[in-house]
Amino acid sequence: MTITTAFIGLGAMGFPMAAHLARHAQATGGRALVWNRTRERAVAHAAQYGTTAADLQDCAQAEVLFSCLPTSAQVDEVIDHMGAHLRPGTVWVDCTSGHPDSARRQREHLSARGVSFLDAPVSGGTSGAQAGTLTVMVGGPTAEVDSVRTQLAFAGKVIHVGNTGAGFAVKAINNVLLAVNLWAAGEGLAVLGRHGVNVGAALEVINASSGRSNASENLIGQRVLTREFPVTFTLGLLAKDAGIALDVVESVKGSAPVLAQTLGLYRAAAQIIGENEDHSAALQLIERMNAQEIK
View (tube, one colour):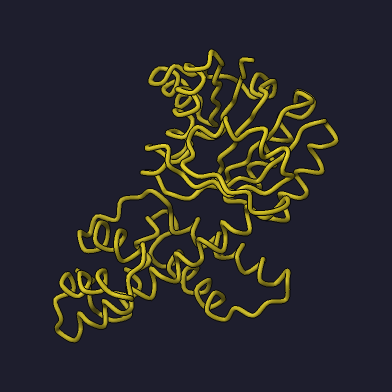
C-alpha cells in the first residue's frame, strides 16, 4: 500500500528530515507533501527533493503527518488551522521539542477527530538530520508507535520511551544535560585560560580523559575555539528546553538543584548574548565573567 506523508515545518532540522521522507516515498511509490509558514521554502524543498509544496488542508489528508516546529504553541496553531480537514485514521508524529503537558492535551484534542498523536522529538542535530541518523524518542501507545516505524526515514534509532508526553520529557532532560555539560566545560576551560594553560591542548587532554562529553568533543572545538558559533540550534530554544525540564522536575516534586541553576544561567545568556545566537555562544557569557576568551 502506498502512503502519503506530510511534513510541517521546514526549519534547520525539518528541511533535511523531510528530504528523507521524499526519498522513502520515491522508493515505495508514495507521496511526500511539505508545508512551511514561508511558502517559498516549501517550494524550494519541492524543487530540490521532489516533494509537493502543499497547503495545510491538503496535508491534513496524509496518512502520516509529521511536524517539527519551535514550540508546542506553534503546533497548537497548526492543529487549530487544520481543524475539520483532518483525516480520521491519520497518525500525527510531532518531532517538536515540545512540552509533555501539551502532548497529552493535543492527543486528547486530536483523538476526538479520529487522529492519533505521538510525541517524537529527535536528537542528533542538523548533521544527524542530513545523514538520516537521528535518534527518535517516542511517547504513545505501542501499537501506534509500531505502525509508523517504517515511515521514520530520518531515524537511525527509534526508541519507545513510554506513554504520551514521555518523548518530550526525555528530550527536555537530554537537552538540559547538554546545557550542563557545555556550561561546565566552558567554565573549566576559561579558568585554565586565565591560568596560562593552552586551551586547545587542555581540551585535547579532556577529550582523552574522564571529563569529556559531546560538548567538549564536538561543540567547543568546532564552534567556540574557532570563534565561528554557526547557528544550528539557538540559545533561546535551549533555554526553553531547560525550562521544560524544570517543569518535568516540578511535576514529580523532584529535587534537581543543578538543573535549576542551569536554567537560570541559560536564560541569562539568552538575554545577554542573544536568544537567536547558537547555543554554543552561551560560553561567551562565561568569557565575559572571566575576562578570558576560550580559544
